[in-house]
Image (cartoon, rainbow over all chains, first blue to last red; front, side, top):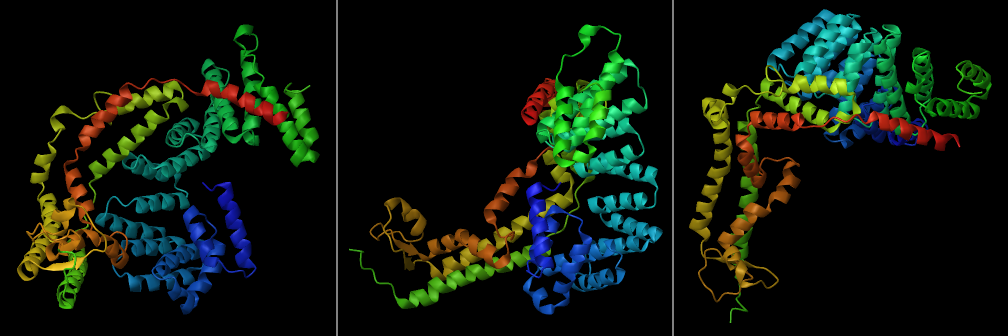
Length: 311
Length: 246
Protein backbone atom coordinates (compact mmCIF):
# COMPACT_ATOMS: atom_id res chain seq x y z
CA UNK A 1 0.00 0.00 0.00
CA UNK A 2 1.49 3.28 -1.11
CA UNK A 3 0.88 6.31 1.03
CA UNK A 4 -0.03 9.56 -0.62
CA UNK A 5 3.14 11.31 0.50
CA UNK A 6 5.36 8.53 -0.79
CA UNK A 7 3.57 8.46 -4.09
CA UNK A 8 4.12 12.17 -4.47
CA UNK A 9 7.80 11.72 -3.73
CA UNK A 10 7.95 8.97 -6.32
CA UNK A 11 6.33 11.16 -8.94
CA UNK A 12 8.67 14.00 -8.11
CA UNK A 13 11.74 11.81 -8.47
CA UNK A 14 10.41 10.38 -11.69
CA UNK A 15 10.01 13.76 -13.35
CA UNK A 16 13.35 14.82 -11.95
CA UNK A 17 15.12 11.85 -13.47
CA UNK A 18 13.29 12.21 -16.73
CA UNK A 19 14.38 15.79 -17.08
CA UNK A 20 17.97 14.77 -16.52
CA UNK A 21 18.13 15.97 -12.92
CA UNK A 22 19.77 12.81 -11.60
CA UNK A 23 18.54 10.82 -8.63
CA UNK A 24 17.87 7.66 -10.61
CA UNK A 25 19.26 5.51 -7.83
CA UNK A 26 17.05 7.18 -5.25
CA UNK A 27 14.08 6.56 -7.47
CA UNK A 28 14.95 2.90 -7.83
CA UNK A 29 15.43 2.54 -4.09
CA UNK A 30 12.05 4.09 -3.43
CA UNK A 31 10.36 1.83 -5.95
CA UNK A 32 11.95 -1.14 -4.25
CA UNK A 33 10.91 0.03 -0.83
CA UNK A 34 7.33 0.64 -1.87
CA UNK A 35 7.30 -2.55 -3.93
CA UNK A 36 5.86 -0.53 -6.77
CA UNK A 37 5.48 -1.94 -10.21
CA UNK A 38 6.92 0.71 -12.50
CA UNK A 39 8.82 -1.70 -14.68
CA UNK A 40 9.22 0.62 -17.65
CA UNK A 41 10.77 3.31 -15.54
CA UNK A 42 12.94 0.87 -13.62
CA UNK A 43 14.24 -0.48 -16.89
CA UNK A 44 14.71 2.96 -18.39
CA UNK A 45 16.57 4.35 -15.39
CA UNK A 46 18.28 1.24 -14.10
CA UNK A 47 19.80 -0.05 -17.26
CA UNK A 48 22.03 2.98 -17.94
CA UNK A 49 23.45 2.63 -14.43
CA UNK A 50 24.28 -1.00 -15.03
CA UNK A 51 25.75 -0.34 -18.46
CA UNK A 52 28.18 2.23 -17.19
CA UNK A 53 30.86 0.41 -15.19
CA UNK A 54 31.75 3.63 -13.45
CA UNK A 55 28.38 4.30 -11.85
CA UNK A 56 27.87 0.61 -11.31
CA UNK A 57 30.94 0.16 -9.20
CA UNK A 58 29.95 3.18 -7.13
CA UNK A 59 26.96 1.25 -5.78
CA UNK A 60 29.12 -1.29 -4.02
CA UNK A 61 27.23 -4.40 -3.04
CA UNK A 62 23.94 -2.76 -3.98
CA UNK A 63 24.97 -3.42 -7.56
CA UNK A 64 23.58 -6.94 -7.33
CA UNK A 65 20.28 -5.77 -5.91
CA UNK A 66 19.99 -3.46 -8.87
CA UNK A 67 20.76 -6.32 -11.24
CA UNK A 68 17.91 -8.27 -9.69
CA UNK A 69 15.53 -5.35 -9.84
CA UNK A 70 16.32 -4.59 -13.47
CA UNK A 71 16.09 -8.25 -14.40
CA UNK A 72 12.59 -8.53 -12.97
CA UNK A 73 11.55 -5.27 -14.59
CA UNK A 74 12.90 -6.50 -17.92
CA UNK A 75 10.91 -9.70 -17.61
CA UNK A 76 7.84 -7.64 -16.88
CA UNK A 77 8.45 -5.63 -20.06
CA UNK A 78 9.18 -8.76 -22.07
CA UNK A 79 12.74 -7.64 -22.78
CA UNK A 80 14.05 -11.09 -22.22
CA UNK A 81 17.52 -10.46 -23.61
CA UNK A 82 18.17 -7.79 -21.02
CA UNK A 83 16.89 -10.07 -18.27
CA UNK A 84 19.09 -12.85 -19.51
CA UNK A 85 22.18 -10.64 -19.43
CA UNK A 86 21.42 -9.53 -15.90
CA UNK A 87 20.92 -13.10 -14.76
CA UNK A 88 24.19 -14.11 -16.38
CA UNK A 89 26.13 -11.59 -14.34
CA UNK A 90 24.26 -12.58 -11.21
CA UNK A 91 24.96 -16.23 -11.83
CA UNK A 92 28.61 -15.48 -12.27
CA UNK A 93 28.73 -13.70 -8.94
CA UNK A 94 26.54 -16.13 -6.98
CA UNK A 95 26.93 -19.55 -8.60
CA UNK A 96 24.92 -21.48 -6.03
CA UNK A 97 22.29 -19.03 -4.96
CA UNK A 98 18.66 -20.09 -4.70
CA UNK A 99 17.61 -16.53 -5.22
CA UNK A 100 19.24 -16.45 -8.65
CA UNK A 101 17.77 -19.84 -9.44
CA UNK A 102 14.39 -18.39 -8.63
CA UNK A 103 15.01 -15.53 -11.03
CA UNK A 104 15.95 -17.99 -13.74
CA UNK A 105 12.69 -19.79 -13.15
CA UNK A 106 10.91 -16.49 -13.49
CA UNK A 107 12.62 -16.00 -16.82
CA UNK A 108 11.18 -19.33 -17.92
CA UNK A 109 7.80 -18.07 -16.80
CA UNK A 110 8.24 -14.86 -18.74
CA UNK A 111 8.98 -16.90 -21.83
CA UNK A 112 5.72 -18.71 -21.28
CA UNK A 113 7.21 -22.16 -20.86
CA UNK A 114 5.02 -22.96 -17.90
CA UNK A 115 5.77 -26.65 -17.57
CA UNK A 116 9.50 -26.08 -17.46
CA UNK A 117 9.15 -23.32 -14.91
CA UNK A 118 6.93 -25.48 -12.76
CA UNK A 119 9.42 -28.32 -12.85
CA UNK A 120 12.24 -26.00 -11.94
CA UNK A 121 10.28 -24.64 -9.00
CA UNK A 122 9.50 -28.15 -7.86
CA UNK A 123 13.20 -28.91 -7.85
CA UNK A 124 13.92 -25.81 -5.79
CA UNK A 125 11.20 -26.75 -3.37
CA UNK A 126 12.83 -30.08 -2.77
CA UNK A 127 15.81 -28.27 -1.30
CA UNK A 128 13.76 -25.90 0.76
CA UNK A 129 10.10 -26.88 1.02
CA UNK A 130 9.22 -23.74 2.97
CA UNK A 131 10.34 -21.09 0.50
CA UNK A 132 7.51 -18.57 0.56
CA UNK A 133 8.47 -16.83 -2.66
CA UNK A 134 8.44 -20.06 -4.66
CA UNK A 135 5.02 -21.01 -3.35
CA UNK A 136 3.76 -17.64 -4.43
CA UNK A 137 5.32 -18.02 -7.86
CA UNK A 138 3.44 -21.29 -8.24
CA UNK A 139 0.20 -19.50 -7.57
CA UNK A 140 1.20 -16.88 -10.11
CA UNK A 141 1.88 -19.55 -12.72
CA UNK A 142 -1.50 -21.13 -12.15
CA UNK A 143 -3.17 -17.75 -12.39
CA UNK A 144 -1.26 -16.78 -15.52
CA UNK A 145 -2.41 -19.95 -17.20
CA UNK A 146 -5.98 -19.13 -16.34
CA UNK A 147 -6.16 -22.11 -14.05
CA UNK A 148 -7.96 -20.32 -11.27
CA UNK A 149 -9.10 -23.34 -9.30
CA UNK A 150 -5.56 -24.65 -9.00
CA UNK A 151 -4.38 -21.17 -8.00
CA UNK A 152 -6.94 -21.21 -5.21
CA UNK A 153 -5.80 -24.65 -4.18
CA UNK A 154 -2.16 -23.56 -4.10
CA UNK A 155 -2.99 -20.45 -2.12
CA UNK A 156 -5.03 -22.38 0.39
CA UNK A 157 -2.21 -24.81 0.86
CA UNK A 158 0.20 -21.96 1.31
CA UNK A 159 -2.04 -20.20 3.80
CA UNK A 160 -2.38 -23.34 5.83
CA UNK A 161 1.23 -22.86 6.87
CA UNK A 162 1.85 -19.15 6.41
CA UNK A 163 -1.47 -18.02 7.77
CA UNK A 164 -0.27 -14.64 8.93
CA UNK A 165 0.67 -13.53 5.42
CA UNK A 166 -1.91 -10.88 4.64
CA UNK A 167 -0.76 -10.33 1.08
CA UNK A 168 -1.69 -13.89 0.31
CA UNK A 169 -5.07 -13.39 1.95
CA UNK A 170 -5.61 -10.37 -0.22
CA UNK A 171 -4.75 -12.26 -3.36
CA UNK A 172 -7.13 -15.04 -2.38
CA UNK A 173 -9.86 -12.52 -1.68
CA UNK A 174 -9.35 -10.95 -5.10
CA UNK A 175 -9.58 -14.30 -6.79
CA UNK A 176 -12.76 -15.19 -4.94
CA UNK A 177 -14.33 -11.88 -5.85
CA UNK A 178 -13.45 -12.43 -9.49
CA UNK A 179 -15.21 -15.77 -9.29
CA UNK A 180 -18.15 -14.15 -7.48
CA UNK A 181 -17.64 -16.40 -4.49
CA UNK A 182 -18.47 -13.56 -2.14
CA UNK A 183 -18.93 -15.61 0.97
CA UNK A 184 -15.39 -16.93 0.75
CA UNK A 185 -14.08 -13.52 -0.20
CA UNK A 186 -15.79 -12.03 2.82
CA UNK A 187 -13.94 -14.47 5.02
CA UNK A 188 -10.62 -13.40 3.51
CA UNK A 189 -11.48 -9.75 4.01
CA UNK A 190 -12.35 -10.43 7.63
CA UNK A 191 -8.90 -11.90 7.98
CA UNK A 192 -7.40 -8.78 6.41
CA UNK A 193 -9.36 -6.49 8.68
CA UNK A 194 -8.10 -8.48 11.63
CA UNK A 195 -4.50 -8.10 10.62
CA UNK A 196 -4.74 -4.41 9.69
CA UNK A 197 -7.85 -2.92 11.24
CA UNK A 198 -7.10 0.63 10.19
CA UNK A 199 -6.85 0.17 6.44
CA UNK A 200 -10.12 1.59 5.09
CA UNK A 201 -9.84 -0.25 1.80
CA UNK A 202 -10.35 -3.59 3.53
CA UNK A 203 -13.46 -2.35 5.25
CA UNK A 204 -14.73 -1.12 1.92
CA UNK A 205 -13.99 -4.37 0.17
CA UNK A 206 -15.54 -6.35 2.99
CA UNK A 207 -18.67 -4.27 2.85
CA UNK A 208 -18.87 -4.82 -0.86
CA UNK A 209 -18.24 -8.53 -0.62
CA UNK A 210 -20.85 -9.07 2.04
CA UNK A 211 -23.26 -6.70 0.35
CA UNK A 212 -22.82 -8.25 -3.07
CA UNK A 213 -23.09 -11.70 -1.65
CA UNK A 214 -26.54 -10.86 -0.54
CA UNK A 215 -27.60 -8.89 -3.58
CA UNK A 216 -26.42 -11.64 -5.85
CA UNK A 217 -27.71 -14.63 -4.03
CA UNK A 218 -30.30 -14.39 -1.32
CA UNK A 219 -31.96 -11.04 -1.68
CA UNK A 220 -35.32 -10.63 0.08
CA UNK A 221 -34.62 -12.98 2.91
CA UNK A 222 -34.10 -12.16 6.50
CA UNK A 223 -30.44 -13.11 6.26
CA UNK A 224 -30.15 -10.64 3.46
CA UNK A 225 -31.32 -7.83 5.63
CA UNK A 226 -28.83 -8.64 8.31
CA UNK A 227 -25.99 -8.68 5.86
CA UNK A 228 -27.05 -5.46 4.22
CA UNK A 229 -27.05 -3.75 7.56
CA UNK A 230 -23.63 -5.15 8.18
CA UNK A 231 -22.41 -3.89 4.83
CA UNK A 232 -23.80 -0.48 5.66
CA UNK A 233 -21.88 -0.44 8.91
CA UNK A 234 -18.65 -1.24 7.14
CA UNK A 235 -19.27 1.45 4.57
CA UNK A 236 -19.76 3.77 7.50
CA UNK A 237 -16.48 2.74 9.02
CA UNK A 238 -14.76 3.31 5.68
CA UNK A 239 -16.19 6.81 5.64
CA UNK A 240 -14.99 7.37 9.14
CA UNK A 241 -11.49 6.12 8.37
CA UNK A 242 -11.16 8.13 5.17
CA UNK A 243 -12.81 11.27 6.49
CA UNK A 244 -15.65 11.08 3.99
CA UNK A 245 -13.35 11.16 0.98
CA UNK A 246 -14.24 7.76 -0.41
CA UNK A 247 -16.85 8.13 -3.13
CA UNK A 248 -17.41 4.45 -3.39
CA UNK A 249 -18.30 4.14 0.25
CA UNK A 250 -20.70 7.08 -0.02
CA UNK A 251 -22.51 5.41 -2.90
CA UNK A 252 -22.49 2.18 -0.94
CA UNK A 253 -24.24 3.80 1.98
CA UNK A 254 -26.92 5.17 -0.33
CA UNK A 255 -27.52 1.88 -2.08
CA UNK A 256 -27.56 -0.11 1.14
CA UNK A 257 -30.01 2.16 2.85
CA UNK A 258 -32.32 2.09 -0.16
CA UNK A 259 -32.15 -1.70 -0.26
CA UNK A 260 -32.76 -1.92 3.46
CA UNK A 261 -35.68 0.45 3.10
CA UNK A 262 -37.19 -1.77 0.45
CA UNK A 263 -36.74 -4.87 2.57
CA UNK A 264 -38.26 -3.39 5.67
CA UNK A 265 -41.16 -1.78 3.83
CA UNK A 266 -44.46 -2.85 5.29
CA UNK A 267 -42.80 -4.27 8.35
CA UNK A 268 -42.80 -2.78 11.73
CA UNK A 269 -42.05 0.91 11.35
CA UNK A 270 -40.33 1.13 14.70
CA UNK A 271 -37.47 -1.03 13.51
CA UNK A 272 -36.51 1.54 10.98
CA UNK A 273 -33.48 3.38 12.13
CA UNK A 274 -33.93 7.08 12.24
CA UNK A 275 -30.55 7.76 10.75
CA UNK A 276 -29.40 10.74 8.84
CA UNK A 277 -26.49 8.87 7.36
CA UNK A 278 -27.89 8.16 3.87
CA UNK A 279 -29.06 11.70 3.28
CA UNK A 280 -25.78 13.01 4.59
CA UNK A 281 -23.91 10.68 2.29
CA UNK A 282 -26.02 11.90 -0.62
CA UNK A 283 -25.26 15.49 0.29
CA UNK A 284 -21.55 14.70 0.50
CA UNK A 285 -21.73 13.08 -2.91
CA UNK A 286 -23.46 16.10 -4.38
CA UNK A 287 -20.80 18.35 -2.96
CA UNK A 288 -18.01 16.17 -4.28
CA UNK A 289 -19.52 16.06 -7.75
CA UNK A 290 -20.09 19.78 -7.78
CA UNK A 291 -16.42 20.33 -7.15
CA UNK A 292 -14.86 17.69 -9.34
CA UNK A 293 -17.28 16.76 -12.10
CA UNK A 294 -19.98 19.40 -12.51
CA UNK A 295 -21.10 18.01 -15.87
CA UNK A 296 -22.21 14.77 -14.23
CA UNK A 297 -24.12 16.51 -11.48
CA UNK A 298 -27.58 16.30 -13.10
CA UNK A 299 -27.12 12.58 -13.53
CA UNK A 300 -26.31 12.16 -9.89
CA UNK A 301 -29.07 14.36 -8.62
CA UNK A 302 -31.68 12.56 -10.68
CA UNK A 303 -30.42 9.24 -9.35
CA UNK A 304 -30.49 10.49 -5.82
CA UNK A 305 -33.94 11.88 -6.33
CA UNK A 306 -35.20 8.55 -7.53
CA UNK A 307 -33.75 7.03 -4.39
CA UNK A 308 -35.55 9.72 -2.42
CA UNK A 309 -32.35 10.68 -0.67
CA UNK A 310 -32.47 14.33 -1.66
CA UNK A 311 -35.43 16.46 -2.37
CA UNK B 1 53.51 8.53 45.70
CA UNK B 2 52.31 6.58 42.70
CA UNK B 3 51.40 9.75 40.92
CA UNK B 4 54.37 9.79 38.62
CA UNK B 5 54.72 6.19 37.71
CA UNK B 6 56.63 6.36 34.44
CA UNK B 7 55.64 3.80 31.83
CA UNK B 8 58.34 2.63 29.48
CA UNK B 9 57.73 3.30 25.79
CA UNK B 10 58.67 -0.30 25.12
CA UNK B 11 55.62 -1.40 27.08
CA UNK B 12 53.48 0.57 24.69
CA UNK B 13 55.25 -0.91 21.66
CA UNK B 14 55.45 -4.48 22.86
CA UNK B 15 52.47 -4.96 25.15
CA UNK B 16 49.70 -2.46 24.58
CA UNK B 17 49.65 -2.33 20.80
CA UNK B 18 50.35 -6.02 20.11
CA UNK B 19 47.64 -7.01 22.54
CA UNK B 20 45.06 -4.83 20.81
CA UNK B 21 46.13 -5.94 17.36
CA UNK B 22 45.98 -9.59 18.35
CA UNK B 23 42.53 -9.15 19.83
CA UNK B 24 41.25 -7.57 16.63
CA UNK B 25 42.82 -10.27 14.48
CA UNK B 26 41.37 -13.02 16.64
CA UNK B 27 37.95 -11.44 16.42
CA UNK B 28 38.16 -11.35 12.64
CA UNK B 29 39.42 -14.91 12.50
CA UNK B 30 36.65 -16.11 14.76
CA UNK B 31 34.11 -14.43 12.55
CA UNK B 32 35.29 -16.32 9.53
CA UNK B 33 35.61 -19.62 11.34
CA UNK B 34 32.10 -19.40 12.71
CA UNK B 35 30.91 -18.45 9.25
CA UNK B 36 32.46 -21.63 7.92
CA UNK B 37 31.00 -23.78 10.66
CA UNK B 38 27.56 -22.29 10.55
CA UNK B 39 25.12 -24.75 9.09
CA UNK B 40 22.12 -23.18 7.51
CA UNK B 41 19.38 -24.96 9.29
CA UNK B 42 16.02 -25.29 7.63
CA UNK B 43 13.10 -24.19 9.74
CA UNK B 44 10.74 -26.90 10.76
CA UNK B 45 7.31 -26.66 9.17
CA UNK B 46 5.53 -27.38 12.43
CA UNK B 47 7.35 -24.73 14.41
CA UNK B 48 6.86 -22.23 11.63
CA UNK B 49 3.19 -22.95 11.50
CA UNK B 50 2.83 -22.61 15.24
CA UNK B 51 4.45 -19.20 15.08
CA UNK B 52 2.09 -18.12 12.35
CA UNK B 53 -0.91 -19.42 14.27
CA UNK B 54 0.14 -17.38 17.24
CA UNK B 55 0.45 -14.22 15.15
CA UNK B 56 -2.94 -14.79 13.61
CA UNK B 57 -4.59 -15.52 16.93
CA UNK B 58 -3.02 -12.41 18.39
CA UNK B 59 -4.41 -10.38 15.51
CA UNK B 60 -7.80 -11.85 16.18
CA UNK B 61 -7.59 -10.92 19.82
CA UNK B 62 -6.46 -7.38 19.11
CA UNK B 63 -8.93 -6.55 16.37
CA UNK B 64 -11.82 -8.75 17.44
CA UNK B 65 -14.21 -5.85 17.68
CA UNK B 66 -13.89 -5.02 14.02
CA UNK B 67 -15.57 -8.15 12.74
CA UNK B 68 -19.14 -9.28 13.31
CA UNK B 69 -19.89 -11.48 16.28
CA UNK B 70 -20.69 -14.46 14.12
CA UNK B 71 -17.34 -14.37 12.37
CA UNK B 72 -15.55 -13.91 15.64
CA UNK B 73 -17.22 -16.88 17.24
CA UNK B 74 -16.48 -19.04 14.24
CA UNK B 75 -12.84 -18.10 14.39
CA UNK B 76 -12.55 -18.62 18.09
CA UNK B 77 -13.99 -22.07 17.74
CA UNK B 78 -11.56 -22.75 14.94
CA UNK B 79 -8.62 -21.79 17.11
CA UNK B 80 -9.51 -23.11 20.50
CA UNK B 81 -11.94 -26.01 20.33
CA UNK B 82 -10.91 -29.02 22.33
CA UNK B 83 -10.79 -31.54 19.51
CA UNK B 84 -8.75 -30.10 16.71
CA UNK B 85 -8.43 -26.38 17.33
CA UNK B 86 -5.24 -24.85 16.08
CA UNK B 87 -4.19 -23.58 19.46
CA UNK B 88 -5.19 -26.68 21.34
CA UNK B 89 -2.22 -28.75 22.38
CA UNK B 90 -2.99 -32.40 23.07
CA UNK B 91 -1.85 -33.45 26.51
CA UNK B 92 0.54 -36.20 25.53
CA UNK B 93 2.32 -34.08 23.00
CA UNK B 94 3.68 -31.46 25.30
CA UNK B 95 7.18 -32.57 24.74
CA UNK B 96 9.72 -31.41 27.15
CA UNK B 97 11.98 -28.97 25.40
CA UNK B 98 14.98 -30.36 27.17
CA UNK B 99 14.18 -33.88 26.04
CA UNK B 100 13.65 -32.68 22.53
CA UNK B 101 16.99 -30.99 22.57
CA UNK B 102 18.78 -34.14 23.50
CA UNK B 103 16.86 -36.31 21.11
CA UNK B 104 17.90 -34.13 18.21
CA UNK B 105 21.64 -34.51 17.70
CA UNK B 106 21.68 -31.65 15.23
CA UNK B 107 20.59 -29.23 17.89
CA UNK B 108 23.20 -30.34 20.35
CA UNK B 109 25.80 -30.20 17.60
CA UNK B 110 24.87 -26.64 16.72
CA UNK B 111 25.11 -25.58 20.30
CA UNK B 112 28.47 -27.21 20.69
CA UNK B 113 29.79 -25.48 17.62
CA UNK B 114 28.63 -22.15 18.91
CA UNK B 115 30.18 -22.82 22.26
CA UNK B 116 33.44 -24.03 20.83
CA UNK B 117 33.93 -21.09 18.55
CA UNK B 118 33.40 -18.83 21.52
CA UNK B 119 35.21 -20.54 24.34
CA UNK B 120 38.30 -22.00 22.71
CA UNK B 121 39.78 -18.80 21.34
CA UNK B 122 38.96 -17.00 24.54
CA UNK B 123 40.71 -19.49 26.75
CA UNK B 124 43.68 -19.59 24.43
CA UNK B 125 44.12 -15.86 24.28
CA UNK B 126 43.61 -15.54 27.98
CA UNK B 127 46.29 -18.14 28.64
CA UNK B 128 48.57 -16.40 26.17
CA UNK B 129 48.09 -13.01 27.79
CA UNK B 130 48.58 -14.49 31.22
CA UNK B 131 51.74 -16.24 30.22
CA UNK B 132 53.48 -13.39 28.42
CA UNK B 133 52.07 -10.20 29.80
CA UNK B 134 51.09 -10.83 33.39
CA UNK B 135 52.00 -8.16 35.82
CA UNK B 136 52.54 -5.27 33.42
CA UNK B 137 51.06 -1.92 34.00
CA UNK B 138 50.25 -1.31 30.38
CA UNK B 139 48.47 1.99 30.16
CA UNK B 140 47.19 4.97 32.07
CA UNK B 141 43.80 6.46 31.54
CA UNK B 142 43.78 10.27 31.55
CA UNK B 143 41.25 10.74 34.35
CA UNK B 144 41.07 9.63 37.96
CA UNK B 145 38.73 6.89 39.12
CA UNK B 146 37.45 5.65 42.44
CA UNK B 147 38.71 2.59 44.26
CA UNK B 148 35.85 0.46 43.05
CA UNK B 149 37.33 0.36 39.58
CA UNK B 150 40.49 -1.29 40.88
CA UNK B 151 39.26 -4.82 40.29
CA UNK B 152 38.25 -3.89 36.77
CA UNK B 153 41.35 -2.02 35.71
CA UNK B 154 44.11 -3.63 37.74
CA UNK B 155 43.34 -7.27 37.43
CA UNK B 156 46.53 -9.20 38.07
CA UNK B 157 48.30 -6.57 40.12
CA UNK B 158 47.90 -6.97 43.84
CA UNK B 159 49.06 -3.55 44.88
CA UNK B 160 46.61 -1.34 46.68
CA UNK B 161 48.94 1.66 46.48
CA UNK B 162 48.97 2.05 42.72
CA UNK B 163 46.64 4.76 41.46
CA UNK B 164 43.45 3.36 39.95
CA UNK B 165 43.91 5.12 36.63
CA UNK B 166 46.70 2.70 35.69
CA UNK B 167 45.53 -0.28 33.65
CA UNK B 168 47.15 -3.67 33.96
CA UNK B 169 47.77 -5.78 30.88
CA UNK B 170 45.26 -8.43 31.83
CA UNK B 171 42.59 -5.80 32.34
CA UNK B 172 43.54 -4.31 29.00
CA UNK B 173 42.79 -7.71 27.53
CA UNK B 174 39.34 -7.74 29.11
CA UNK B 175 38.62 -4.19 28.03
CA UNK B 176 39.49 -5.16 24.48
CA UNK B 177 37.45 -8.34 24.65
CA UNK B 178 34.27 -6.49 25.47
CA UNK B 179 34.99 -3.12 23.97
CA UNK B 180 35.88 -4.02 20.42
CA UNK B 181 32.35 -4.76 19.34
CA UNK B 182 31.90 -1.37 17.73
CA UNK B 183 35.10 -1.80 15.79
CA UNK B 184 34.04 -5.25 14.61
CA UNK B 185 30.73 -4.00 13.36
CA UNK B 186 32.69 -1.43 11.40
CA UNK B 187 35.08 -3.97 9.87
CA UNK B 188 32.82 -6.95 9.44
CA UNK B 189 29.48 -5.33 8.75
CA UNK B 190 26.54 -4.87 11.03
CA UNK B 191 25.49 -8.42 11.81
CA UNK B 192 28.78 -10.02 12.63
CA UNK B 193 28.89 -13.16 14.64
CA UNK B 194 31.39 -12.02 17.23
CA UNK B 195 28.81 -10.35 19.37
CA UNK B 196 29.27 -12.25 22.58
CA UNK B 197 26.51 -10.69 24.61
CA UNK B 198 23.92 -11.25 21.93
CA UNK B 199 24.97 -14.84 21.71
CA UNK B 200 24.65 -15.31 25.41
CA UNK B 201 21.12 -13.96 25.22
CA UNK B 202 20.40 -16.43 22.49
CA UNK B 203 21.61 -19.28 24.64
CA UNK B 204 19.30 -18.18 27.40
CA UNK B 205 16.30 -18.30 25.12
CA UNK B 206 17.21 -21.66 23.77
CA UNK B 207 14.80 -23.78 25.76
CA UNK B 208 11.84 -21.97 24.25
CA UNK B 209 8.72 -24.10 24.22
CA UNK B 210 6.15 -23.21 21.54
CA UNK B 211 3.38 -25.33 23.01
CA UNK B 212 3.44 -23.18 26.13
CA UNK B 213 2.84 -19.99 24.21
CA UNK B 214 0.15 -21.74 22.20
CA UNK B 215 -1.84 -22.62 25.28
CA UNK B 216 -1.24 -19.17 26.77
CA UNK B 217 -2.63 -17.64 23.60
CA UNK B 218 -5.58 -19.99 23.77
CA UNK B 219 -6.37 -18.95 27.30
CA UNK B 220 -6.28 -15.28 26.52
CA UNK B 221 -8.41 -15.82 23.43
CA UNK B 222 -10.97 -17.67 25.51
CA UNK B 223 -11.56 -14.73 27.80
CA UNK B 224 -11.88 -12.09 25.08
CA UNK B 225 -15.22 -10.33 25.29
CA UNK B 226 -16.48 -9.59 21.84
CA UNK B 227 -18.15 -6.25 21.44
CA UNK B 228 -18.75 -5.28 17.87
CA UNK B 229 -17.33 -1.82 17.28
CA UNK B 230 -19.06 -1.12 14.00
CA UNK B 231 -22.41 0.23 15.27
CA UNK B 232 -20.46 3.05 16.83
CA UNK B 233 -18.88 3.78 13.52
CA UNK B 234 -22.19 4.71 12.00
CA UNK B 235 -22.54 7.59 14.40
CA UNK B 236 -18.97 8.59 13.87
CA UNK B 237 -19.44 8.50 10.11
CA UNK B 238 -22.48 10.69 10.52
CA UNK B 239 -20.45 13.20 12.45
CA UNK B 240 -17.69 13.11 9.88
CA UNK B 241 -20.09 13.64 7.03
CA UNK B 242 -21.85 16.48 8.79
CA UNK B 243 -18.54 18.22 9.08
CA UNK B 244 -17.74 17.41 5.49
CA UNK B 245 -20.99 18.68 4.06
CA UNK B 246 -21.26 21.85 6.04
